[in-house]
Amino acid sequence: MLSSAWFTDWKEAQTNHYRQAAREYEDLYRLFMHGDLDEQLFRKRRAHFGAGPRPVAGRVLLRLTIPLGRLSPRQLRAAADLAERFTPGRHFHLTPRQNLHFYDVPLEDSPAFLHAAADAGFGLAPAAGDGPCNVVLPAGCGTLPGEAFDPSFAAALLQQRLAKDPALRDLPGPFKVGFWRSLYDEESEPGNDLSVVPARRRVGTRQVRGFRLLLAGGLGPNPRVEALWKSFVAPEELYAHVRAVALHFKERCQDSRPGLRLRDLLLAEGWPAFQEDLAQRVAEQAPDRKALFFHRLPLGLPQAATAALPSWLHGFAVPMPEPGTFLVKGQPLGGMLDVATALDLAGLIERYGQGELRVTPRQQLWIPGIGEPNLLAAFQELQRLGLAGSFLGSFCACPGSGLCPRAGLDTLALGQQVLDALKDGLGSELGRATAGLRLGASACGNGCGRHRSADLGFEACVVERQGRRETQVRVYARTPQRPELAALIGTVRPEQVPQLVRSLVEGYKGSDAPDLAGFLRLPEGYEGLRRAMAAVGARDS
Image 1 (cartoon, rainbow, N blue to C red):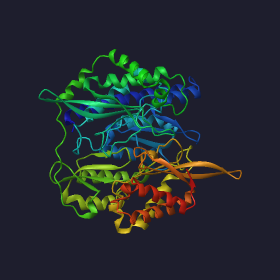
Image 2: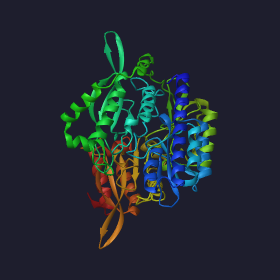
Image 3: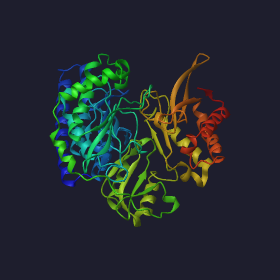
Image 4: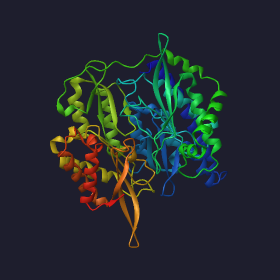
């Protein structure tokens, strides 16, 4: 894990940067209010500070970053206070990019909101294309075994550099950077423009740290898994490579149409020309000397000692390398947290954990450092808050039709129906059968609910039938032929989804698969899903 002194200094430096950004936004807002800036230009410039439009006049969406995906109890209370004071719904949304979204904040309150957020250590998340997106870090980094080393320091340094680089403003589309713990870690999420994976290689008698770099992924309407670009890059060369990719994307894309991604540029240019230009850009940049400190950090953690846990704790608690300590998992449906739940969660972390909450790219909440004697109490409190139960998979969702103007479906209601159908069909086997299962729901083709990286995913769409427009749900699943991304299986009406899930469960119960995720990736699971689709009268893909 990061040394506490270095991390404290880093957080203080970041907070000062966030405060400066809040002051810049306030100056921009005053220019607009005094009539020195027209509304169209104000809308464009405020996007850099995470302020987006809302359907209601005089209201804005404010986006904040969670640095490294880690929240302290103080920050949780601050987020609850922001939702209490400034939003009508008194809740906030934890996104897969490890951001916080606050909906319908009055425009006149936006400067005060951003000042309070900066004081609490939250960054301002630029709108897609107005600057690099938040750097995503897996929640298990530095806490669980299975990684070459803890990449938290590299992610922190990279986030700092990207946020302060003026050359990386006004990009033609989203630029998403994410770290993986390893190439095979189940927490790793595809879909980044640039994925950074810790790696080691032996030089003489020494183990040298570095990174693999993968390029040009995406999970929107045309998903693509990242391709390997560099098998090993030294820490001091990492930022030069990331910056080269971002500048190439900015300078080569003249067309800034919505949804434009790095993968589109790669497909247009071809891989050889793409690599040649990146190599030249990297050569023109100096090494990052600050990153040399990275070589002194410890290598990966040892394997955790096996612990005999009650069956109801499997999947909820994961042993950590330190004997007698565990990481526990919670799941707010669709990443939505209300004020009361956030406040109670902050108290739980202080009583039982190490003073930290980690947000995963699938909207789960991980609490490290809970001692074995406190596991039952922690589980019961999370269960009371609606953050833990028998379902041990993950359900990732966009905010849906209640909050997003593009949405064609209430994803949170759909998610609850899916979970209820799983519970009805599996009964006491729900925990064992859903361990590791990834579910995803997106209310439009943008894929914000990560339905294409799920084992079973749902996407709202609109179809024309007999002159009428109807909302339908596309169903996706990972297949034996394409296990890396979920493929379209067919289309059903929203009310047919629970019946589809129950039929799928019946097929699973008649198989030898250890769990539902494993069943869906077998040929018999794929055929079982097709039969379940036919049973509810689905339209074939």
